[in-house]
Length: 380
Ligand SMILES: [Zn+2]
Image (cartoon, rainbow, N blue to C red):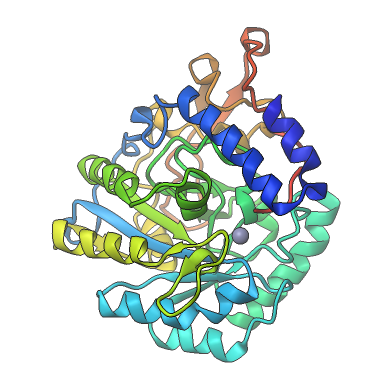
């Protein structure tokens, strides 16, 4: 209730007040969802027939950055320098029509061996508001995907509709997460592995890469964490489970040395120290990939298995988004799985659930998040 009211009123609330309300809501949710955040134990199972990561690495690591504003755009090269110095690479996801995206920067990022993707179109919270709007904007997004010669898409505020996204000419996307009750649409994919999103009409597919480490704005701005211990704790669990550690952060919110402290910023040291931690604690244990490389790998292994497996692979929200609830009804959702051929000969999707929600048994408790038909809130 509180959550819903907040997101309806958000556009007219001053930013400082928004942050205040988000902190109140987040603290409430923090207590309520301790069993599923930052770790949801049920999301740790690998897909059926799992054969492991390249080079027998224990887990996979992807670094990604949604660049929300001009400020973030102008800091990209600084962040790349830090990542390069520590031996990492990442993908930068730019918003085509919110600020000036320099073509030279795109080329530079690519030349450095880093990735580029499209992050929404305008970042105004309206992209998934209706199918009509989405279809119109998808044409524009595809134009940028083509112009920039990129293959991936990330959704602003993780508000998306995976089944509509077949309109986009993409190989991979990030618009879900294994567990994150703090998102405007808190609909977990409940897996720490990539998964295919198949198109029933033509059998085509793209690979969804859910983020599995909490976003920086939540940790350091909303929850006011003073260090990166939540990332470290989650990474230890992800490594144990052999899953995909995908961290999506924002150069917009990072304070670099020499810059004065602005509101909604955290020291870039938090990120830098986390990279250093990965390097020293897990050296040789992870396959470090760009999102596009992960999508290639996932497609090349043909979905890894042909049998339906566990609750961990129930990605219920995109099969029946209007009637699914998150975090509250997972044991009440039944899924019947079916094997589906993809467009590539010999390849099969891992699972493709058909969900039948049990509406009568949905409890009427305050924090029920009905997945809406329309995106309700502008991004943070
Ligand atoms: Zn964003």
